[in-house]
Amino acid sequence: MTDQSPPERPDLYVVARMLERLWRENRPMLKTRLQTASNINYDVFRRYLAWMLSKGLVSVQNCEDGHERVSLTPKGEESYRKLVQWISEVIQGRIPGQ
Amino acid sequence: MDARRADLAFGIMMASSLALTVVFVVLALCSSAVPLSLLSGGIMMSVWIGAFVFFVASFSAKFVLAEIPVSVEMARPVVARALRQTGSQVSTEGESIVVRVDSLSSVRLTFTPSPKGTLVRAQAWATPTGWSVTIVFLFVWYFSIATLIATAYIFRRSMRHSVDSLLPVIAGVCVDVFGGRELDIRSALLEGLSEAKRLASEAYEGTRSNYQDSILLVAVGGIMVFLISLMAAMSDFFGLLQGPVDVGFGMAVSGGLVMVFVAAFLWLARARYRRVLRDLRSWAVGLEAAFQMESSGTMPVDSQRSTIEILADAWKELPKWLSARRKSSMFREPGVWLVMFALVNSSWSFLMIGIMALSVGFVYGAYSLLAGSGMIAGAVYLYARWRKKRGAEDSRTKREWTERSRMLEDLLGREFLRS
Image (cartoon, rainbow over all chains, first blue to last red; front, side, top):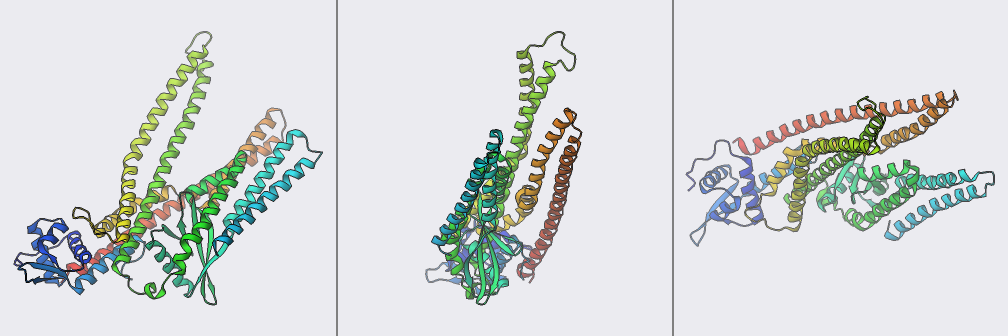
């Protein structure tokens, strides 16, 4: 599955959407569930998942029921937090990241 | 300050201004030297003085709301952040913060050092619409009683909101949570949504106000076109008609011209504002819904856009919103507009007196004309200065936005796109 080629320059909207879904769920999500919740087609999803795995933002676990589940790593949660905070700061007229 | 003290302050100020009004009315009535024709003017003047005193007192008085154990520099962002997270529309104005209550009323919070940290004081304040209503009423003599009512409404709403809604939040500000530490994700989402919602709502209201102003101008213009064309038709100004002119004919010509004038300008105004208003409203409503969803912790359905996408899109819309807000910011500086309104309002009387005096050969009327013209020139100068300042602020905002966007993109690139 993760042998899909990652996107060269990923769309941050898609990355943010996937991170947000995982953050909201607060537990490992079935891959198909994450794909549906992220509102992207399966091919795109696989490529983005591969990219996020390579960056250490998410991890994939094989569960006892035979399904693969995706969960947010601490690095992924921290990246999402930074993303939200920076955008929020810019909207508030502040300098991001300071 | 508690609710009882807010009510007491309101009662004292209202009673003082009414007492002042009554004193002036009694003085006017008791003065036997005053002719009857001037008596009504004296009573109106008394009501106006009462309204003016109440207006000034209401918007100047500050009441201690709370004392928080942090420095002034820290208190301001901490309080603003806490209020934003409860959904309040908070804007910073210099050293103070302004919290919107309703379409007319706001609360201005000021911060001063105290032995225990910072004293937070509440002051009744108005929204741009609130300022425009009170200032216009104040300077149109016949409506001075309406100033009293509008000011009383704003004052009472502001004070009640301070006590009932702001005080619990400010008193509960937890410095350990906010003080300099990194925000948690939900708090950051709520803050961003709250601020975006405020900017979109203000842009919508400002644009709608401009649209309504343009309709008002069209109506005034229509009346003027009607009167001028009626006079022109009745006097056969262009020499097109031979013989006496029928009143009905004159009215029909004028009416037709007015309809064409009004229809053309309304169409132009609608074409200019309709789409912008629809977009801004849709943004304001969408952000409010997102804020409610986020604050209640509801899980979004799959087809819904994620909050981070909404925020990212809002960030791209910001220059448009800021520009729309600034275009309608005539009453954001109530002091300047108060002076401008006073100058224009007074110049009218001076000009009329001057023209009337000159028309009966009273040469001192020229001085009155000169004074009226000077006031008009002063108002024009203030307006030009305000426009220039607005333009400079617009350019600065765009520059800052571009710079911050570049910094944000750089940060995002470093965090996500580079290995």
